[in-house]
Image (cartoon, rainbow, N blue to C red; front, side, top):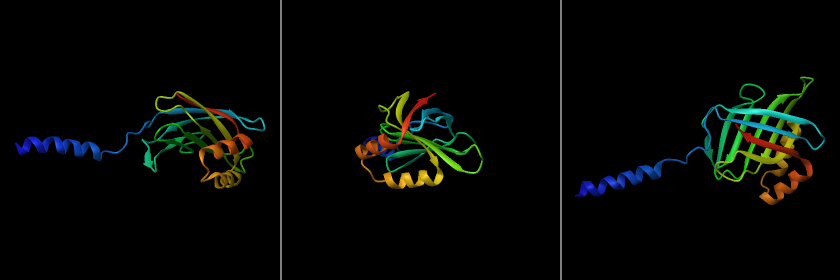
Length: 156
């Protein structure tokens, strides 16, 4: 009788120990397209290189973008916030650049999400990130609406 009671408890314990399920997997692709505030069109495709790492309620994925392992995709576990960014060189080959799309999908199962596009030099992007870090969602959206262009992330 004790063995019969112990088996369900062990099954429950093993289920509760498993971590959260990743919303995406290696090979999944995301098309990022948009236009900066000053009218520069930009796009890249982020192809996930791994099955993600979960930390502080966010999934982070390394991705191939404009070059091998140049991109990153981050999604909140609820999938109501996601951003994708890609590192690349400027046309003159002298400046490190970053393009990032900060989008707000409707939750699990989303196919497209509209958001805010930032395309800056690495130094300007780092300064921007430092300025917005720690902002609540409403302040962040307000700041992005002032300085960012429009973008869309589409799941392939």
